[in-house]
Length: 273
Image 1 (cartoon, rainbow, N blue to C red):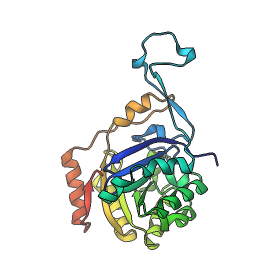
Image 2: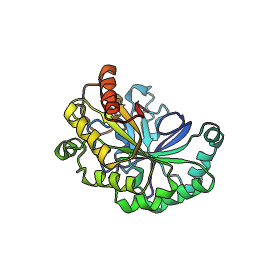
Image 3: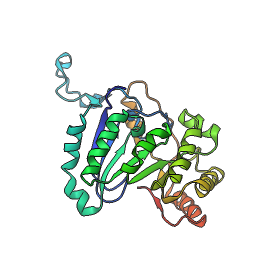
Image 4: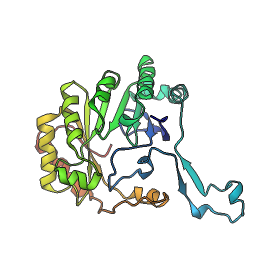
């Protein structure tokens, strides 16, 4: 497998896990979610974002644009270099109960040796790690790192198989099976559900998701993630990417869905995060 590429290292994040975190966003994902808010994360290859509004008309395009009209997305960090970057934030992790979050794209489909080496380095230095995953990877990959990961932030997008495949491009069989197995293996799991009107925000589909988690996953926390359209701007800057516009859920919509989860017995339900 080619070297994994990273398209962003976000410091001082208060999302995607406990405390203050540094989040590493890998490029490459097996899903093609119609609502993706990081479309630059889908391809495993480096890409260019186009910002025509930055053009100053200097005529230097062939020599390299001084105004940044084109921005390359995706670069390789050797494990030791990435580890050094992350450890600069150690004081914030220790003071807040935070750590490192691996996100994407999809971290679980990156080079296995690279991922394991990075996690082992962080574990040796007592840095807690969360892995944000869509769950679509061979379970052997989860087994190989489960002892090195503090929390899995596990996305469940839909239970209806036709609905899932229509809007993500893949079957959810592997995703749901991995969720069951991770829970049986004692992993700490925070379930994350993107709330997308017209896809999974209906009472019927949300009830299916709630029932699946009740029956199969010990979820320490449930995060309901409201769909937003911010990915459309980035998508427009990528050649050939087209997402689907959905209505954004209202605050009242989100509160009603959160209440349904709480009424089903889930005590730790958060909107966002």
